[in-house]
Image 1 (spheres, one colour):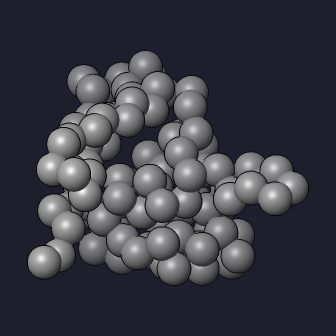
Image 2 (cartoon, helix red, strand yellow):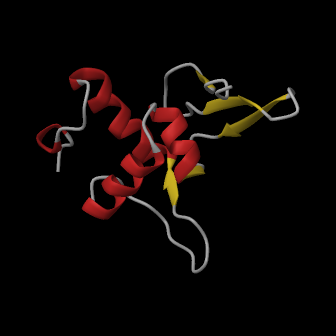
Length: 103
């Protein structure tokens, strides 16, 4: 049996827009993580929010297309502001287009 896909719910649009990611755990219970507008998300959660694989997130980080914060011995953390920036491009183009990132 495949795990349920996460449920991603965005707050109302605006400068303080955060996101909630709900996932069903192995025991059947649902758990929700909230990322505030100025928060960060691990690569796996960023993948859930954007609807892509963790490998894709890792590739974007390594290519410099997605900003990240790295602490020694910890997975990279992706600022929600950067997740939103990439989400706009994905929603408009269906894929990450470097020419649309505005850099």
